[in-house]
Each structure stands twice: as C-alpha cells, then as structure tokens.
Image (cartoon, rainbow, N blue to C red):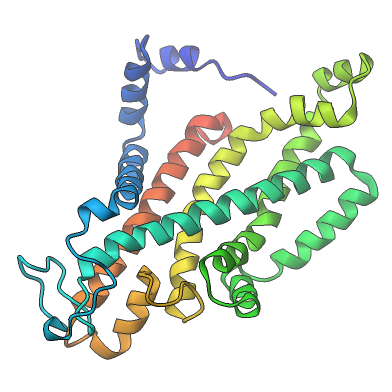
Length: 297
C-alpha cells in the first residue's frame, strides 16, 4: 500500500498549485469530462433541492383543457395527456431519482461494506458462506433481481430503494473484501495486534478507512446505474406509483401511445435520464483516475 501525496503528484504533472482552489482548477483541466460530469451532477442535485422554486406549476395538478399542449412560453416542455406540465414533472422527478439513487447506494454500500469487511478480515468459514451468497446474488443481472424484489415487496419508494440496494451488496462486498485481504497482511495491522488491540477495533479503525477510496469510486459509478434501474422499473410499472412524477413512468405512459402525436412526452424525460446517468458516469471515471493511481495512463 502506498500513500498518495497529491502535492507531489501535482508538481510532477507540472502544476504549481499551492491553494485549494488552484488544485481543483488544475484537476478540472486535467479531467475535463469529469468536471463536466460534476457540473451535471451539481445541477441535478440543485434542481432536486429547489424543485418547488424552479417548477412553474404543481406537477400533480390536472387540467384537461390543456391536455397534450405543445411546448410554448406557458408550458416550456408541453403538457401530458392529463394536462400536467411536463417541465414541472421532470423537475420534481429529479427528487425521486435522487432519493432512489442515493438511498439505494447508501443502503447497499453500507451492508456491502459490513459484509466485505467481515468476510475479508475474518476469512475461514465466514468468508466461504458470504462468498457463496454473493455468487447467488450476482448470478442474476441487477435489473432482473430488482424486478423480482419489487414484485415481491410492492411498488413504493422505500420498496424500490430496498429492491435496488440488495443487488448492489455483493458488488460492494467483493471490492471491500479484496482490499481487506491485502490490508490485513500489512505491518500496521500486525503492530496493532501486538499491542493487544481487539480485532473489531483494528478492522474499523485501521482497515476500513483504507478502503474508502475504492468505495467512493464504486458508489459514484453505481449511482448512475441505480437511477437507470429506477427508471426501468417505473417504465415497467413496478417503480414509483402514480401520481408521483417519475421519469421512467413518464416514458412508460407516453412511449407507446403518444410517441408520434406528442413526441415531447418521450424526448424530455429521455434527455433527463440520459444526462443524469451520463454525468454520474463521467464523474465516476474521473474520480477513479484521481483516487486510484493504477488506473492512470
């Protein structure tokens, strides 16, 4: 294991960055696509936080007189078949996607860290049991397993978060386990054992902090897939139930029936999903290059 001195790394790269903002600016110049992904993610988060301020209409208000209205100054992205403002529903739909993405990533990541740390540090029969369970969970694709879980639990926001979080557990657990297996053989672990420190304290205080870098990278990369999975579940009718706005459900309601007569009902939710996933993937790739020197070209 090697500690990364970012000041030394920046000087080797030719940067004379002494202040915090200068370092950020230099890294943004080195990773332009990652910076663009961060900007998209920031706008996505701000949109979700200030949805009530940004949205011009109530996303749940039905106005049959304005059903399927084309995009105009009054309705920037038109209206749906119930006369609800599409722009307002997309803005509020960001909250749903952000809640599902962060909630499922945090839940799945937390359980995965516990499983991976326990499995890698204790090893033996504990590791054998956990790895066989992980093999079973990873045998099914993320979307398929999420579909099964959602169908069993029922369509609701908490159930969707749980259904998407469970398939993430084995992926996180395997990454943490691999790092733990390498870390437990390091001299600082042996030194901690020699002074009588308990196994749990060693794992939590010395091993776990050294697994945070790959965990952050993995969580950022998984965030995009969770948003896409939620949209897929809603598209299939097993995600967030009506009347709450969800990008996937907006596509499901519009794709088959109105794709030709009212294409804005498909285009704008599709763009929102694409930008959210695109931004998280770009930022995750850049974060991996920064935090993991083995990935640098």
